[in-house]
Length: 347
Ligand code: GN1
Ligand code: MG
Image (cartoon, rainbow, N blue to C red):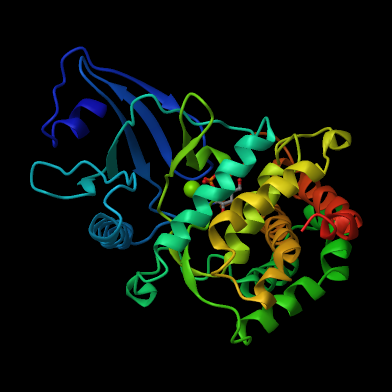
């Protein structure tokens, strides 16, 4: 299949080698090598991204803007097909895109030191800052209501009504925890009506594997622009907290390993603020820690809703996979709330 896809591009297929890279739950990704160069090939999950052309539109607009205003910024534009398309549709196979591999760069799957956390936060901050003069309303919505917490909460309530009794029974404690923390939804709804919160170009998937690093662990640029849409800074900062603060991620079944590492919080704050301090309003800054609660809470709801809906979105590699992920994230949220006062001292 890879040969068929690559034949749509002007690239040499001699000595072709490819291997899958497992770094996300949604799209399939491969590393491709020929005798001269490396590429990243991705299959876009059409069940999730119903309009792949919206992704291509956004990437093109952002690429043009950055090239015009910040030509020195490293932006990885997709390789175009022979007929000049960024997205390659192959009948019965789906939508694909090919990206050049940046030489001497690498990605990491977990944050191992505070420098990486600082650099990641700085790179996502820089991305939003450089695009502050970009007409954000011209971006297309690639995933409607992606971080709409009100809607996520409603989907959770709907799932409670349609779920099997067995799955409902297993989830009782977590359902109670979600309901008890509904104030996180209320604060989100206040933000929507708060004029000091600005809609900006937001990445919406700020996990560390979406940052390219050089050999000295310096951040080079951000990648995976499928979910770049208009949004609030709490989405980006919140997902950094969700994925950088703990030494273990959502897949960890031994919850005693989950931790909030204060020095990593400090690194996120400093890294993001090194770029965004003049962009964010004071009101936005006071919601910095709230960002983490917002994103972790939403992830609990999304994993649990999927469990109640028989794993139709994320899938499950073992029995109760999404229930365990949801419980893992609930532990993370609980610990974050307990540390909130201490973290405030670091800002
Ligand atoms: C999905 O596929 P990946 O890992 O980039 C999801 C994110 C979740 C994440 C949880 C489009 O991201 O929103 O936070 O899983 N992306 C989509 O691991 O749903
Ligand atoms: Mg992604």
